[in-house]
Length: 301
Ligand SMILES: Nc1ncnc2c1ncn2[C@@H]1O[C@H](COP(=O)(O)OP(=O)(O)OP(=O)(O)O)[C@@H](O)[C@H]1O
Ligand SMILES: [Mg+2]
Image (cartoon, helix red, strand yellow):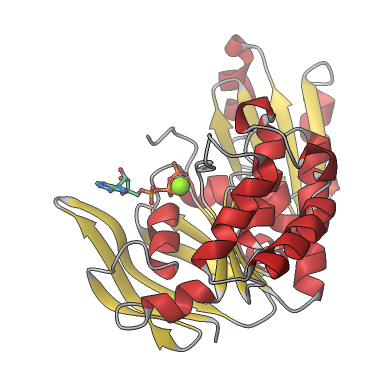
């Protein structure tokens, strides 16, 4: 195992951020941690990259204990933290070269890696730009380049694509899949369920510091959802009317939005017939449906 956590806990005074988490990440896989704001994803990652110590339980990375071997572990992994933490006084390439020094990488090697990584992340033409001149997407690409400077075996990515435009997200997805093909293990958090579904071999859904379920995206969908979803967006007055007639079908409601779940599209025929003018969308069930079913639709923090 690249990462193995057993009954992992982290407490901050009276807040239990991670509560009895079990986690097993095999080499060469992309493992996703998803969950509402405040679920404990970042705290879990910080324990894995040895910035925060567990309160109790065991956590091994590369088969080394995080409390007794943090330096050895840190040397072998790369981190994309949730918040951009680039040095604002340095240029793009200086940010990479200074970071390389923390790993004891020689100047020559750092210079050639810096060039390769800037090419890999499509930033070569920005090598000399000062940080304030970079867009949000450029900074995120630079942080990913920086996470690769020590040729890591494991990359920890805390919301790598939050706030990025579709072009940059697609570039980052493409690069992450390429890194996975090279055998690098990825641990990723994201609030985009399409991203988790596309990239992750396995996903752990966290809520309120605990694991709710874990599995491949398709297994999670199969075990929690019927295969089809009919979404309806009704006028306020009609929601109660629709539910009074079709509330016997499995459903969830959120304001004016209604979600009906079925094993076959024919199960929705009665609904269509009764409300042909209501805005609707028929689609296969997704990881987002599983997420909302397991963690609820109300806002957390
Ligand atoms: N240094 C800290 N001191 C006190 N409480 C903390 C600290 N770090 C995290 N917490 C608390 O621990 C809980 C989990 O936070 P964490 O940042 O791990 O959540 P998250 O799942 O990453 O959320 P988000 O999706 O918003 O990034 C929250 O209640 C948070 O307020
Ligand atoms: Mg977080």
